[in-house]
Length: 298
View (cartoon, helix red, strand yellow):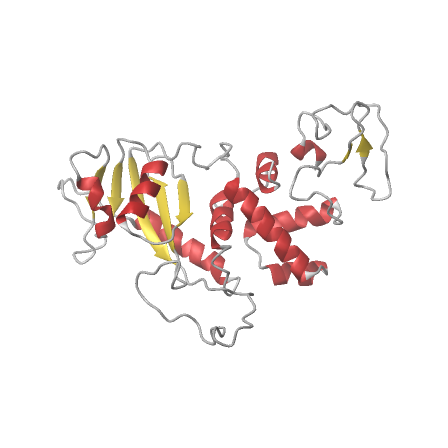
């Protein structure tokens, strides 16, 4: 853990490096030991400045929890297997997912760059996920909790507990990025797509009218839309290849839905964190030091 989180060596919160010959200041929580900086007197350990600061878990427990969070294992299953307190682990999970969501992309393998997808061809589509207010107590008799699942169909919004998830995947690199939106109005779609794609990119979509802005002459991006009433893909240049489709991003929706289904509902305020963790961990078969740093909020 020390080599993964601090590859350049451990230092205090003020940036003073820890000498190699310095003995720990406090060994009561071994193997997590505290050091006192000789320059400023600050007490710190390997988890200082991360989401695991002041944790009472040992490193092996932290690694198992991070592994479970990355794989999408439900919190209840983790706490039962490891004999941990459910509220504490759930709170820690939300903190880690918030750190992943707010943290900047660091160029991990398979992760989109900070300035978005560089691909000349990008598929864009939306998914609507049922996400209410799971876990929130409803003490007001005029605002009772939902007794049945949300049966609303079609397009949803954040207000009616069906927040949309806008996904984009590059056909050349295979990199993908996802954003939970309030709605799917043209202004929302335009702001998100423009911020995550190259200026000259060709955007492949379905027949959703929220992408009509891409057909404007003033827009540098272009649009090629598939009409699903005619089939799953179209070959408009008659070269024998049906290149106009959004099958790649629609296939990713299946993986995301299967991941979220394990939790048997998530609070809509935390949905973006679960989606961000899916974006970070999907397509990776091992936990690397860079991935650990991203999950620890470094």
